[in-house]
Length: 333
Image 1 (tube, rainbow, N blue to C red):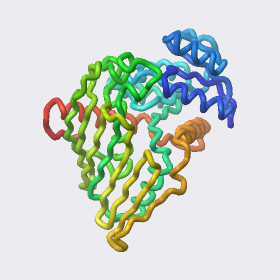
Image 2: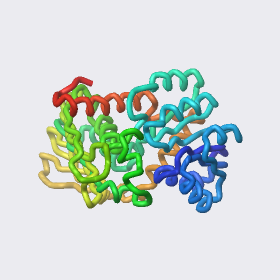
Image 3: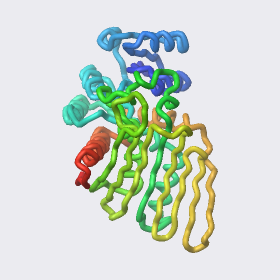
Image 4: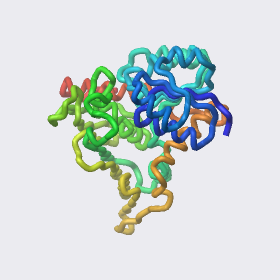
């Protein structure tokens, strides 16, 4: 592994995960920046690494090869523009932003600076998703007709280390809400069955949680191949659940992400085939593979699986989902 100077912006749950993984990979010198002094104190004590509360101070202290942007989504684009000005390759945690403002400027600047920008949709590196994509491409269940994806977990349990009311998921001004927070599903559904052409959604706050964002969403998408997908997202379920069912004209696939099991059912043999091999790996391995991919992109050995243009397209779909919910109608994307 190359020796790099790395800056991590934001040390909430995902920031801490990346810090741990980077240290375990022994990739080089890591510096952390976060305005929250309590988070910085924890990181400094836990990992014995250099910390800053001010991003300008961190940037002026040394040069960096790469940065991991793990701040709330409302700050992603501004952070990335600042880092690209300094000639730093950027890993941006999903989603790319909370709206479309500034993304075109980000695309232009990354191109002019010739720097890598990767958007961190970690599920793309999941062994289960990789296997499903291969099976679909090989025609294992024929032409895809429909897909149903679901994820849910009670928001106060989601990030138990902090008061959920102060976390970005609870706050619209920070880019929170279940649609943005769980946009993995929008990304991987599009990846599996094709471009999205039309959306209809209902996004609401149903609970008594002390938040100003939506905690529930039901999304229907029409894809370019004529298939339809349904996505359920929520901050409500007391038990974390994540799954996907895909129906083709020759069979179906059922992926239980919690149990790390993939089942295939075909019309010919009329029985399930269950796959376990490779699916029971530690979930953290997907994040490790994501980081390795980022570094391979920096060296020019690979191209970003989710670059800014891909991130922008996902963001466009997210914004149409929210608009559809407000207008109560199908919208073209």
